Image 1 (cartoon, rainbow, N blue to C red):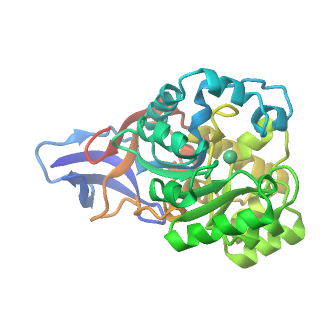
Image 2: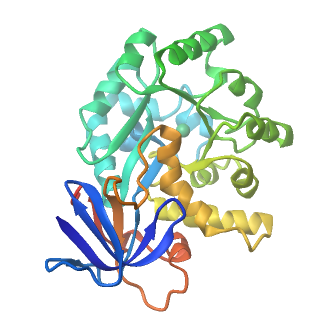
Length: 354
Ligand SMILES: [Zn+2]
C-alpha cells in the first residue's frame, strides 16, 4: 500500500476539498481521510494538491511530426483534404511522432485521450504500435477505402472530419455501421461554417468544436443533449473564431481537446486557462466558475468517452496528479485552472506511479 499524506485533495465529482491523505492499494483508492494518516510509511505530498488526471477528449496525434507546419496558412491549406500535412505524413515516421506526443501527454498529467485517427487500418496500426501502458486510448478511426466493419473491429468507433467530406448516402452507411457495432461516433461540427443540422442527423455520441454554430444550431445541440468537446485554443490558433464557451457550458455536457498536434500544444493547463478567461472576458461574467472548467478537463472527458470515473473516491482506480505546494492560495480549484503550470506536477499516479 502507498499512502500520500499532507495533501489538499479534490474529492468526488464535486471536488470537495479534503485536507488529509489518500491510500492506494493494487492501483485502487483504498482510503481517503482527513488530517494525519494513521500509517507509518507515507509519502509526504508537502501540502500539494491532489486532483484527477486530465482527459484530452480530442486530439490528432498522427500529425505530431508536423508541429506548426504552414502555421500562417488558411486552415484548408494546413489540414484540409489537400493540406500541407499530407506531404509530410507521406515522407516521415508517423509512429515516432505519436509516441513522442503520448509521452508528452503523460508527463503533462493526461492519462486518457480520444484520437481522431486518419488513414484507415494503416493509421490505426500506427497508433496502436505507439501506445503506452498507463494511458486510456480511445481511438476513432476512418474507413479511408478500407472495409468499415474491419475498421470498427480494430478501434473504438469512427471520427468524421466533416459532413462535407462524404456524400450523404455514405454518411448514413457509416452512421448505421457504427450504431450496429455499439461503438462511438463523433465528428467535427461548425469548425468553419455552420453544418450542425447535417451533423446532428447522424446522431453522434458527441460533437467537436461547434465554433461557428449559430443561435438556432446551438439550441438544437442543447435540445439533443449531445455532449460537446471544445478546442478553443486550436480554433483561435487557426483563426476560425471562438465557441460561445459560457453558453455551451451552461447548456451541455462539455469536455476539452487540444486538437491537432500540428496546430496546438498538448498542455491541458493552458487549455483550461485560455477557455476560462475567454469565457469570462467574452461574456463579461465574473461569476463564471473555474470548477466547471476543471471538471471538463478531467472527469467529463472520461464520462463522454465511456471510460470509468477517475474521481478521487474510495474504490475508484488511482488516477490523479500531485502538484507541488504554492503559498497563499485561497482557492485550490481556481489555482489549478489559472495559476499552476505543468512544471508544478510532482507525480502522476496511475495505479501506483506513471
Ligand atoms: Zn479535430
